Length: 220
Image (cartoon, helix red, strand yellow):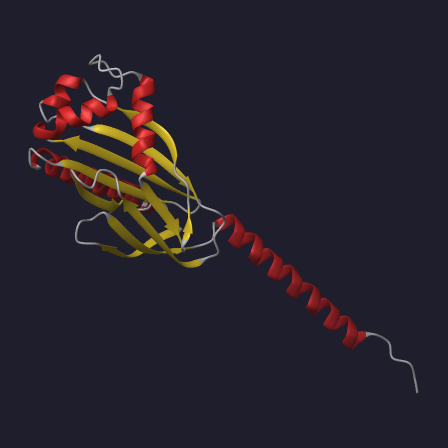
């Protein structure tokens, strides 16, 4: 019951964050290129979603970069190429170690919607994190894509499960950079194995101690 309540709370908070981002997207200025990033931190990876919404005044310029053959039809290859270009301008590191991003999927809406300032390009990527010890860790996210046009948002999503706890978030004034302090706990299976190992070792020591006390002693 408790887990169900927690999951419901996470879904509600995540939905609210998406709605707030959507509201901001719909209200941005005509000459801006809004780039809203959401980060989901997990023990072994970071899931990243980036929504890019060009205002009417810059929509044509953005579309020209996506539509390489200028036929007003965005192919899957063109969509992927643009998404890779965006990701190449995004830097992520954990505890000071750079972590590469891998594209998961991407979407470009109909050209008419983009030209009207209502189309949002969506990109999803994942960064695999090397094995980390339990305790405190630091993540840095920085978006350097199209600083000449871009305005930025960056937020972390509520972690799923209890292994990751967000302790603090800090953004620069432009929200191009997001610093996250978080704690990582070991998975239950590892904690159980560690407990069994300690318990087994303790039992051996106890048995050896009893044996030593009770062993027959030779007369001197």
